[in-house]
Each structure stands twice: as C-alpha cells, then as structure tokens.
Length: 604
Ligand code: ADP
Ligand code: ZN
Figure 1 (spheres, rainbow, N blue to C red):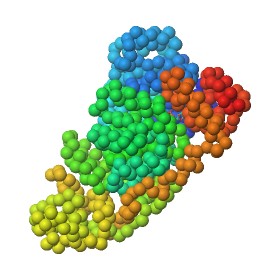
Figure 2 (figure 1 turned 180 degrees about the vertical axis):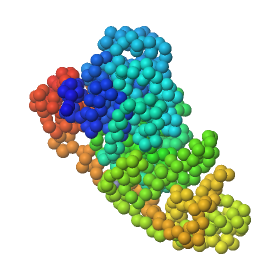
Figure 3 (figure 1 turned 60 degrees about the vertical axis):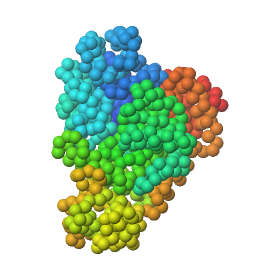
Figure 4 (figure 1 turned 120 degrees about the vertical axis):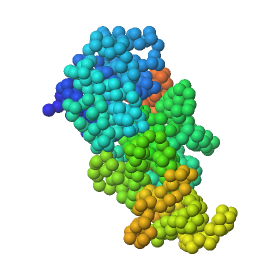
C-alpha cells in the first residue's frame, strides 16, 4: 500500500511522477520509524530516500555527511525546491551557525546537514537533544569501513546515535556494496535491526571500455577529441605528479582541464571543484581524493589512466559518469607497467601481512576485470554478488576480443626468467626480458653476454607489443611475480612450474595491433542518444542559455535550476500551459511558480 504523503511530496516538491526501484519501500519503511541500510549505485537516487521521509515526518532530518565542501550546493539545491534546509560545519561564521541552531530549535528546518566531527561535539549533541529530530541519515556510510580508501575515524563515533535517540529512525546510505563492506557498516553503526535494501548496481547507460595503454596521454586526448569534445569529464590518476602533468598536457592541447589532489591548497581545490560544477565542459584531472558526493548529473566520461587499486573503488569512480541516465563513457587504459608498479607498491606498503594480502586480492580482482574475455558488466556486477546477462554496451560485447593459445609463448618467458636466475643469478624487468626473447642487440644484452643464452631470440615471431601482452597477462594471473627486492624485476611463482612443464594450457587475450586507439566501440552511440531531433535543438539551446543566466544570478550550478534531461523533455514536448509544464519530470510546484512563465515564453 503506498503512502499518499510520500507520493505527494515526490510530485509536489521534486516534480517526479513516480519512485524508482526500491525508493518507495525505503521511504515508507523510514516514515514508519524503521532503520534502513541502503546500497545503491551512484546516481541511483539515494537522496530522495531520506529527503522524502524527512519532509513527511515531524521534525528535522539530520544528515551526517563528510563532504563539507558540498554542503552549500546541497542546501542551495533544496532551497530552489522550496525545502527549508541548512548546514552546520566549520567553514561557517559563528553568527550564521547560531541562526541555524535557532531555526532548528524553532522547528523551522526540514533538513540539517552536519559533518560527523561537528555532530559529535557536546554542543551539537545538546542542541539536538533540545529540538525535534525526524530521522538521522548517515550518508557515505562506507566511510566507517577501515578497509576502504574513504575511511573516516569520526564515523566510528556514530554508533552512539542509536543509544541516545533509540526512537529516531536511522538510514545509512552508500554506493559501495561488497558483502564484506555491508556487514562491516551494519556492525560498526549498530544497525542490527535495520532492513537492508540492496539495489541493482547496474548502470546500463555507462559504456565500459578497457584499452591497452601505450602512449596514454595521446590516447586520452584522442578519446576526448573523438567522442567527448566539450563534455564534462573526470580523469583519474594515481599520483599528484601525474595529475599535474596530465592536466598541463590537456590544457596545451586545448582541453579545459583543471587539477585536483591533496597537495593543492584547500582554496585551490575548492575553486577548481566549483568551476567543475558550475562551468560547462570542464575536465577534472584528479586523484581519488576527488569525487565523493559530487552530484553533477552531466559528467559524460570518467577516464582512468592508471590502474585503480580495487574493483570497488573503480566502480564508484566510474559511477560518477552519466547520473542523468544519458549515455556516458567509462574508459580505462591499462598496461604491463601498471601491474608491475602496483605489485611493487603492495610489497612496499606498510601494514601487516593480512593487510597486504587483502590489497593483493583486491588487485587480482581488478586485473581479472581488465583481462576478461567475458562481458565487463557481468564481471563487475558479479563482484557485487549480482547476476546479469551480457550487456551489449561494453567493449567486450561490442568487439569480442580474440584469444589465442599462449602456452608456448608463456614457456619462453618463464624459461628466460628461470635461466637468468639459475645460470647467472640475475633478475631483470620486463623490458630486458622482451629484448632477450626478441634477440635484440642492445648495450645491455651485449654487456652481459645475453646473446649466448639458449632463449636469446626464440621469440622473434611476436612483436614487442604482443610480448608485453603476454607478460602482463602472466603477471595478472600470478604466473609471474614482481620480485620482493623491488626495482620491478621479475621472478617465478608457485604457479609457473605447471606452465613450464606443459601441464597447463594457457589461453591469452590477443593484443590489438591498432595501438589501442579509441576504436570502434566508441563514437557512434553518442550521436543517436545525446543529440536531439533537429527541430528540438534550437529550443533546447535557448533553454540552456536561459538556465545559465538564472544559475549565475542565483550563484548556483546550472543543474540545480534544471537538469539537462528536464530541458530535453521540455524541448521535445513543447508544453503550452502551466499544467502541461507541471507534468514534465523535474518540474515541481516551486520551480513551476518561479520559472513557469519564462519557460512557456521561450517555448512559444
Ligand atoms: P545518488 O545520491 O544515489 O548518487 P541522487 O540522489 O543524486 O543519486 O539521484 C541521481 C539523479 O536521479 C538525480 O539527478 C535525481 O534528481 C534523479 N532522481 C532520483 N530519483 C528520481 C525519481 N524517482 N524520478 C526521477 N528522477 C530521480
Ligand atoms: Zn558487456
């Protein structure tokens, strides 16, 4: 049975016709006073799950979020909808904070955003005791997990909410969803009684592509030029230095790129983030420090130019593309050096053996995804315990990779590594091993007399690129290891022996000799899905210009006024009356009042 109050708020305030997926069940459960643990992919619609109950229930919904830099935008967006929202955090003048506190005590707030460290202060807890609380929403709940890269120690303190306010429902939300993380969240937040809502993690509008890395910056630039010219996007890198050099490179090549990493001052970071949110077509080049909670709906691509450390992180990062449901790209370039580097980083990482083993398992899962000959999405969702059929919208589905029997090639590699160690006591990195196999006459081969090895030149039949593919896949499968001594030199593993002795056949993914260009699986789809019918285009452009002006005068990002998806719908439906306009998705009462006349005039 549906709750008419929830339905009413959804339509009146948010302008949406119906709930999506589990939203309705969650909203009704929380309105009824139940605790909930909500797992939904980024863009799945988590905010409504606590915003609607906060508006229906008596009192203020208290939202705990670690993302101080985004609170202003979140509050602005709610204010545009006519919702009474405010925040308390350390960026605020104390006088403003007093006013917010008073508004809360007077029952004037529907939603109050608070940073966890603020919430846990005596002053704030006493304030909350004196007012009326509709619910606690714990956003980004995976921050309580010590294994994740977003761990925030203050989150551990949040379990006391339950002891202090046993009757106030709590709803914890996250887009991170392996079974292990879920158990950990429930435990650490004392959500024993909570109902779990696990949504499908599929994001069908995102096209997943993983390409071989060669000249990665050039490949990235090709991707942007060929498919995402003028689009907003995020490029993830592993290190600060790489962020800087990549942002510079893109800027020199005419892309509007900005850097973001923890080494920049807070002011520069905030400035760049704000430009990314407010301007059209900015490409943010960032470390994983960037992105959590960014709810920009029209990010058209997320590119990784270094191998992510875990599937979980990767999925969360790529999920930031296409929240508006329109087609988007997740693109990853990956190569031999990534495997070597990451294995080495794990070896050198501080922490005990268990910790390193866990990092190793996470990396293996990521490598499995990169090397799979199966649908990428099937693999991704399997990681979250969900089963789907081949998606038709990933590189593997669109251009099935070929496999070949790499047993003999693998034996050549392994025996080269073996002989160098056994006969000479030497270990080398991938580049030199490949030179030996291909019988290349280099200073180093000559200096060490490597042309006398029996394996010298036995691999002249394969290109250097092909050999890199073989080594990469051996490393990915644990049949070859990066030596513990460091320097990225290679050594045999337990698993190598079976291959060397011919007890195991090894099917490998064939490397494309196209040098990993953007390839066929890009491009085409964009035109059909993103572009409008020609007769709707002028109106859409006019609406966007109008939106830009309004957003500027209100000092908010354009999507806070209306999403592209809403403007598209208006441009196609051409509503002629307030009533018709009110039926467009994303047009609620408040926005209809504020902007209805302007829009109808533009349509006419
Ligand atoms: P999440 O927090 O899960 O990443 P959001 O709450 O930001 O996702 O929602 C993603 C997008 O989907 C937003 O643009 C939001 O306005 C839209 N949305 C959410 N629920 C609905 C709905 N029931 N109908 C239409 N659009 C929705
Ligand atoms: Zn697929």
